[in-house]
Image (cartoon, rainbow, N blue to C red; front, side):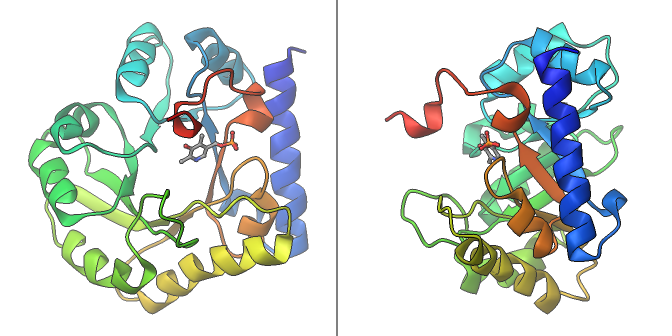
Length: 232
Ligand SMILES: *Cc1c(COP(=O)(O)O)cnc(C)c1O
């Protein structure tokens, strides 16, 4: 078995174990494989291991990969920051967008989503750590934004996405993820069903706090050689 197939399998086992500990069904958590900085052939290998949902952060890289992999049945999620002038290709080429953090971007996605496609699934990114370097709306403004986005045509608001501050302390991880969970609870009535949270280093804590999508890169594909997010 190749290293990527083994990574997919290990990751599913981690999710299963965390779900058992949390008293949740394993099917209630969906694995999004984050393939940014990895070539199309890595996605192909993960697909052979049964993985169908892939997350990408950089638009040009993602579009090239999608073209190269057009023969496969894949579901693409855009998880990077969204520039206002890039909303059209995002709305046309992805099934989900996780990083919506302002109304203007949501409006542009709504206008650009082709009528022949199902509604674009959207999560509002919430800055649960309060770090200036992180994107996302402040928790205090998240529900107001959700109430505006939920009314937009061609979009389906699914819930909230967040990235916790890097810390090895599971209690601190859980307290950050708990802020997103609280928003989902406060937003009951908006018809939301998604918490996109948890990555390679903290997916267990996220599942304890109700994550329904975990976004995992390194634990599946290995260390990224060049991560634009941490490079100025
Ligand atoms: C890169 C990235 C991930 C995956 O992170 P890993 O630590 O490699 O699992 C998840 N979510 C977002 C938004 C990312 O940019």
